[in-house]
Image (cartoon, rainbow, N blue to C red; front, top):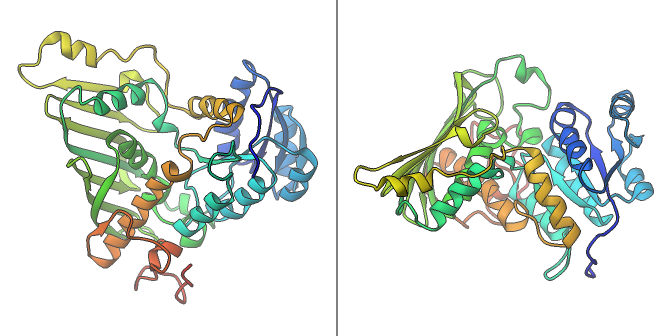
Amino acid sequence: MPEQPALRRPIRVAIVGTGAIARGSHLPALTALGAEQPLEIVAAVDVDAASVEAFCTDAGIGRPYTDLGLMLAEQRPDLVALCTPPRFHRDQTIAALRAGAWVWCEKPPCPSLADFDAIEAAEGGPGSAGPYAAIVFQHRFGSGSRHVRRLLSERAMGRPLVAHCQTTWFRDAAYYSVPWRGTWSSEGGGPAMGHGIHQMDLLLDLLGPWSEIRAMAGRLVHDVETEDVSTALVRFENGALATVVNSVLSPDEVSRIRIDCEEATVELTHLYGHRNADWRITPAPGVAPERAASWRNFGSDVPSSHEAQLRGLLDDLRTGRRPRSSGADGRTSLELVAALYKAAFTGGTVRAGEIGPGDPYYGALHGNAAGWAPGPPAVTA
């Protein structure tokens, strides 16, 4: 694929899927950034004609479509914001990439590592300027995570030793009455995939590569194909040990990451997004006050958000630079989720890099495991 020059004209954007996440997150982010830089939402797509027409009317944006291929051919967008259920992500992302559009795809990225690798194969080749497909992992972005990532990478607080990653949320039976929820074919997994992946992605972004995982999963309350709770133990390449808990059974909802380093504990407590004030750094006894004060200086407050991630993605698109949370950088969180399921369903230890073509957990995250896989065994990629 030939290199593309830096984009100078207004970026043409299309939104695919006009449900709650499009209305509540993608559209506001695009609107905010469109007020400060050249950007135009040229189209929206949904299989529900009434929904997409109402979306375009309410937002005052371009033309409604019910056919993705027709929209790509007629509008030639530079960026597609993909807000559809996960089972559609592979084919829709590849279609957009082949039409020359970059893709910003909602999590979960896609139902399997095989799907993700097919997407990556459709991207621009080495040395090209795209197009690329990035996953919405907005918790990585913002001033708080940026500051803590720097402190950890520089070992400013000493080596990271112990970590805890918690996504304990609550979802009732009405939540799972939506037909595509709670199924492997539609969501790819349960709370580890659809909910906890955000905090797991942030943990990986802060601590770096993982090396091995052990896990358990249960279906304790909900009548679904997937799990409704999972726990895991993760060892990182830097030696740190972490616990991970993902639940949709927890009335007192919280999202939390805690990392104990040699000289300080850093903790993030929030629910669906964080600001500087949601981070706390507690120095160890004997740490000089001026050092602790420097750790706590987060700078100007930039909340984690779709807008924060999109701002960087648009810069990358304009300059033809691979964005964060794409390619290998975007795959690492999906690989950890796949390994969590494999460890939970087999009772063994799973090591980074071991799930590839031929492994049953490569083509489907349930791995055809007895008691978990729906119906007849899936064909592995």
